[in-house]
Length: 96
Image (cartoon, rainbow, N blue to C red; front, side, top):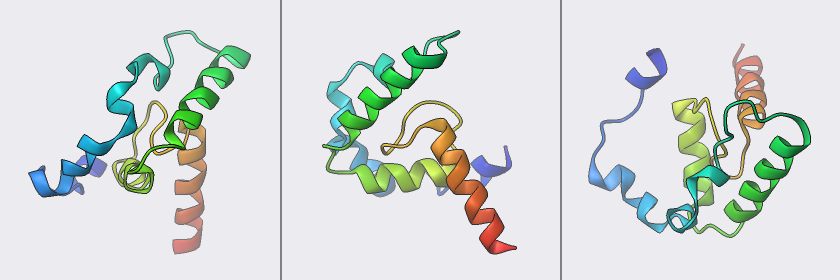
């Protein structure tokens, strides 16, 4: 809950960029793994989602927002859960 408290208030100006997201036209199942998905199937789905993200006009905003919010699930801004975790861990190491 601490991470949620640090997020900016939900105002239209801060979230309007989401209307331009390419993912608005996609099946959400592409970005979030079903329960029990593992191994090669999970990797293929995540790679497909990241490929979809690569064409998105708001990729950078989505990526940074997902890192700020510490999104625990799915592909956001072209980053998988593991990739976001690694980036955040690196930021913590640099800060200390």
